[in-house]
Image (cartoon, rainbow, N blue to C red; front, side):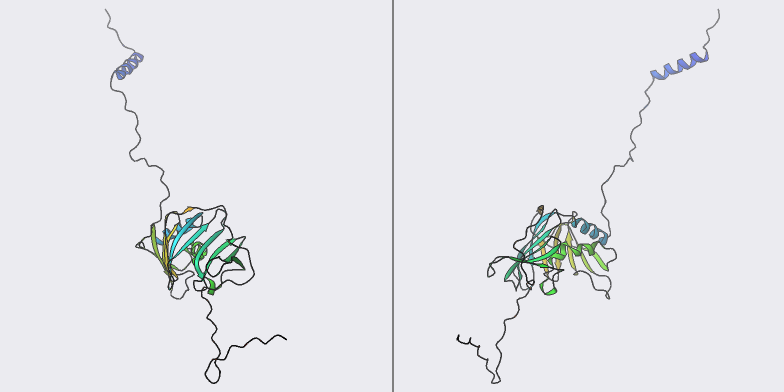
Length: 265
C-alpha cells in the first residue's frame, strides 16, 4: 500500500488554512507622531508681534469707546467709529477752544473734516473740509492711532525700537513700548506704550498727549459714518482758544478807553 504524498499546490493550500486558524494579522494604526494642521502662530519677536496686530487693526470695522485722560483736562469719553466702507469718525468732547467746543473728526468722501458739535456755548454744528491733514495747532492726534501710525508700525524699514512691557493697568491684550531706534532720526509717530488685542483692537495707548483706555467691548461698525453737520467754509478750530485781546496802554500808563461808535448822522 502506497503512502499518500502532497503536491506543492496542496502544501500551499494547507499552509494558508493553518494561517487562517491562528491569530489575525494586526491592522495598521495611525502613527502616534502624526501631526494635525495648526492655525497661524504669532511671532515671538516683539516688533513682529506688534506689526501683526497693527496689520489686523487696519481691517477692523467697529465702534469702540475709550476714556481719555490728558494734561489739564477732565477725563473725557472718546468714541472711535470705523465703518465697513472704511470711513471713520472720532468724537472728542472739549477737543477745541480749550475745552469749550466738542468736535468730531470725520473721514468721508476722500477727505478729512473737523466738525464742531452743538453743545454748551456752541449750539450750531458745522464741518470744515480740509485739503490735507489737520494743522498742528488743531491736531488732537487721536486720529493717528487708527490711521497713519498703523502704517508706521507695520513698516519694517521704520526706525523703531519695540519691546514688550507689562500691561497697562486696566488694559487687555499685549503692550509694547515704541521709541526711536536712532537718536539722529525723528520718530514718525509719538513714542509711548501701545496695547493691542490679537485681533487688532487698540485697548490702550499712553503717549505724550494723554492716555486712552478701552472702556468696554467694541460693537460692530456701521456700513458708513454720518456727518454731524453741514460743510461750512472756514478754518479748523484750534485746540487752545486764542488769548483775549488786552487793552492797549496809553503813555500815561493807564488803559486807553474803548472807542465809542460815532453817532449816526
